[in-house]
Length: 187
Image 1: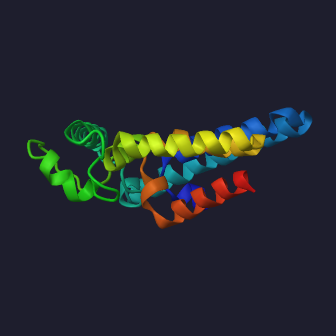
Image 2: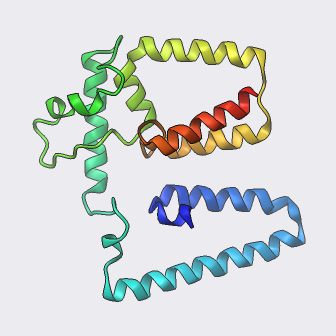
Image 3: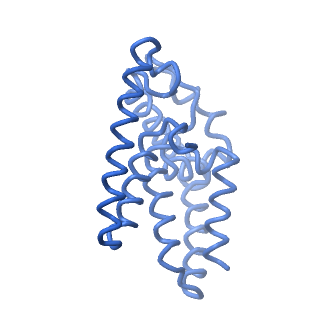
């Protein structure tokens, strides 16, 4: 239910793909689960249509406005401008929002949000030097321990969802979850 209430279409798709991939080797069980998933998705669409008749869905699920892609594109451009202005050291960890108004002066729509891409957010905040140090530590860790298959699944979900949203680096709940995933790999 928590995944559904996130309102994140990316997480919905990644969850569905993960469940189908996990159950694909289960033979006959997969066929039954697959039809249950299709039934649940159909019921979700039906409920959305019934609710949407009286109350627009976008009143309940944020971030689905008509200018969403334009806003995200402008945030990406602002992040690239920040990277260009300070490529080595970045603008400082946690300082993306502080510097955002300076890089969105000419935009028609101003959106005070972090860039919806964890890679652009990291590079704009800590620069190439910070990314280099992070890669060096990860390389040393990788040389000492090779994580299990489940870690790669979790990392894949984090990377794919992180390409379209910022919450892995900005929301406490997701930072804790990220620490848990990394801790499982280091164990």
